Image 1 (cartoon, helix red, strand yellow):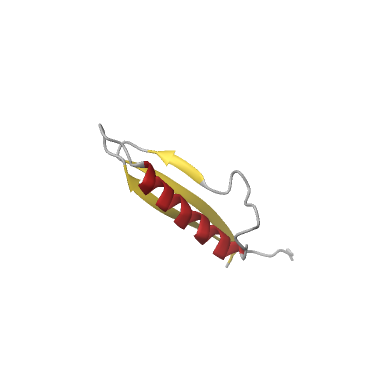
Image 2 (cartoon, one colour):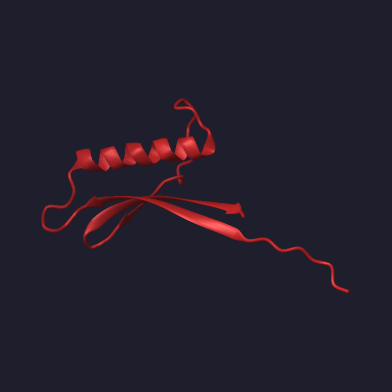
Amino acid sequence: MATYTTETITRTVRRWIVPAAEPWGAASAEIGKAWAAAEIAYREHYGLDKETPIADDALCFHVTDEAIVITFTTEGAR
């Protein structure tokens, strides 16, 4: 008889999408607002206060044809 365990991992990707259509791109103020909101959500998820530094790679910025997308991903057993 085999002995084993199983688990299911759930991945959640949080995204903040700032429109950045050519030729104008995105305003720095709008990127800043989305960045701040993403950082707040990250800190809330991990229970960090505003004084605790977050890792340099905590938030990722992706450039698409029409937007700048800020993301962070969490995983957890279900």
